[in-house]
Image (cartoon, rainbow, N blue to C red; front, top):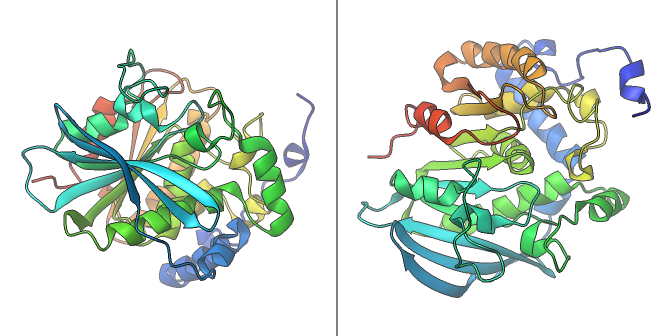
Length: 335
């Protein structure tokens, strides 16, 4: 790949790097406002849109719980889909995780089924069955189909449709990350009126592109109580700034804003578990560890250093369910 401009610019801390501020509460307020601006989320939040309640498309029981597929419109003309997965034999209100998948054929992986009929079992690999993983642990799951992925890709074969949509978003001051966070916000507004969802235990998790959305959603939406971004946390400079990545990852002026620890630091003091692969080629571990050291300083300053964790699986770009959940469940009370 041709050398890019990022490599030719000296590495300086961003304008909203936490080290530039003497008061972390002032920093979070200012940085969150700026991050909403550069992602375009502020424009989307300002829209007046009374969304209709979600429509239930189908319901079925599986061994671990009851699953409903729903459809809703986060903004006019934009249809979204999700699976609401409620565990059997558990006390309401349910502790809950919003689950976000990355690039692939969509949210069907969370149920371990083929997308064509959403029923035929798939051979499961790389712990992609996020929703089933939640149900096994007595946790409800809401699996959101992300914009331009899966059923929302615009492609008959469900291949990702991020590229042109992400570029066209820039023409109107939006970003795909901002839109994906907005969809999560609209989902949270619906969950807020349900009496079976525990809003004091409402986490977000995701892998790869879903991990990126989980990271930014937790940073920007205080309703989220816990975060588990997987195979998405490294430095911006050393990952999306150093090698080819999908266009959906890019935000204008992001490095002028700060680095990944400055985004993740907006989650503090809420618990976060970063999940990385030791040999992940596209989110390098060495860069992740550098940023995690900075992030740990933020949590220490808030007096909760143990609320900030990183677990590392002995593999490449994939989720590591056992070690991820082991760490998260020490911070996320289920019973």
